[in-house]
Length: 521
Image: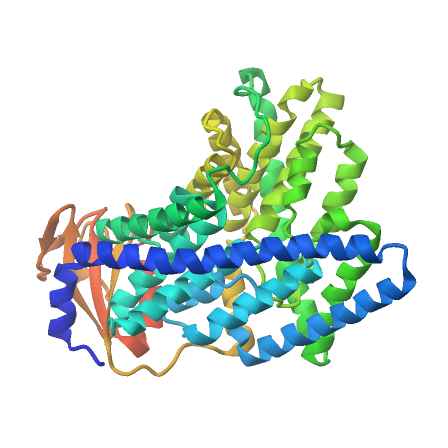
């Protein structure tokens, strides 16, 4: 049902209370969806190991397995034809919907992504469950919005709640779910969205803990905080991770472009990663799947420098082959595995070259996961909190922050864009998807005014506002101001903008530029 302006404004006044209840509902539904996806993918990994053990050394078995992989590739290609927006992790698609640049069909995404992710994991592709869990959770939130006949403004909150619940259930990391949804998806830290997202994330974590237990995702011993004498090495590690993250982003986008240049049927493109997985399953099965077992191996104290280097190199290349094909699956967890590999290489090399005590190897693994994630995704708070929750270690705050900040600065200086923004740009260019015409519905968006932005310390009448938008209010702490021409905008204010649905994407981009901190010339 089309919502009029008065109705939207009345509900916006009660958002903070309404969205707590809706956040709990979205958390329960999205959490169950993501939990089911997680259990199914873990089962797929178990079946894959059993299949590889059964066919190894048997020529008929190997031929039969390669035939099965070709069948899996055909089914995944058909699913991508049925719903192209299930390709990849799904996070760029969600960000595109949040900014009004594309629209996903939730009832098509849910079954297609669910099945496609399962088949890719069964085939051994180097993809993760976390990005798809975020997309699945968000689509569950969108389904709730449609069932309750919510406005598009409110739907965005439910999308964010569902995304947080999806990540929370996938990693059992509720705080990381909150931070990622605010930092990467919603890009807004208002009280309304924070409380609702926390409600959703905690609900999903509770459900996941009831089914999966309360053990952390990674369980490896961590020594005490690194001695301060090693902090110079942490700066070096941060630089390496920043440069490595920039290269990862370049390679990921390049692999997509190479697949795009192949003038052949989608089935043939999908056949490439599945057959590659078949070959690697016979000669180096450790690199298949999400890579969880690799982290356990690298932190178990039995790995060697040469073997880690080989595994990381092959895993890196195979990850590009898997993700570049457009197969439904994420890079979230795989990039953490690669970060762990870089940390292991750094620790083993440091032991040989600088006399670092071997007991600190796992510290470098942990630190490198956070730094590599930060360099690639450009969400440092999420990276730090995520590693805390996944390992259960809270003793590395200073070193984690140092490595993450150094990696962030290095990647920024190398002019590497955040990976999900780059993937969204690539998706829009490839498909020419910029959303539907819209139905004339009004949408509210909130934008935080940064220090040094074009809007900061300006009067309402002096700001060059985007065309066809209305400044509804200014939120300053707990106070809501009615905007007048002489009202001064202060750093930290939240500007509430109303626009037509079909104009939302353009206005969102212009308002983001208007409110963010300006770069020094």
